[in-house]
Amino acid sequence: MNHQNFQLKVTFSLIASVTAVLFANHAIAAEKVIFKYQSFRPSISVDELTDLAETGKVSQNLNFYFNQARQNPETVRSILTKEVKAEPVILDRVLNSRVGELILDRIGKSVSTSSGKANQQALRSAIVLSANKDNKVSLMEIIQNYPTTEVVVDGERLAQTYQQLYILAENLQRILPSPTSSN
Image 1 (cartoon, rainbow, N blue to C red):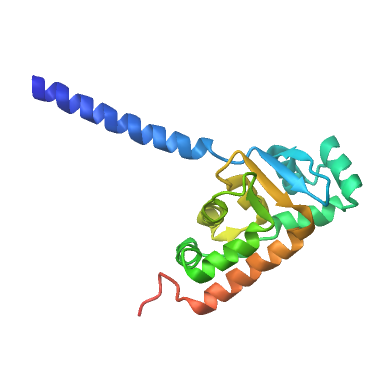
Image 2 (image 1 turned 30 degrees about the horizontal axis):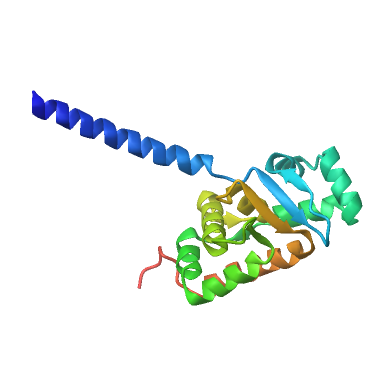
């Protein structure tokens, strides 16, 4: 009887731990985006930005920001939603190499944590999670999957960041064999 109680407690603890980890992983995601544009730093909810990306709807906050920054909402929407093909396994391997760290540093100049700490880890996680869904990555997905509640995006470098992602994805396919290909 004592052994059964112990086994039940261990099983319950294991289930509770796994559940906590799963819920914690889903709970930690960007909720707010701080856009940097020169000295202007508006805070926008990820939901507002997602709405722009998915429907083209520009909220009052976003409209004010776009007017102040003299940005065309459709141009920003286009950059946020452009997708690049990328296999998660290949991405993970490359982003965990020296070359990957250099790429993460470049992209991290445009998309980063608000504290500036653990940028590479957060960005690597967001990129791989984005590719994990459908073998494609977009800047909007990276923002949505960013593992902190707040993400800082340099509005002046958005197009440059997309270009870096595109070059990364294109070159990865040539550099590394597909994990499903036979040797």
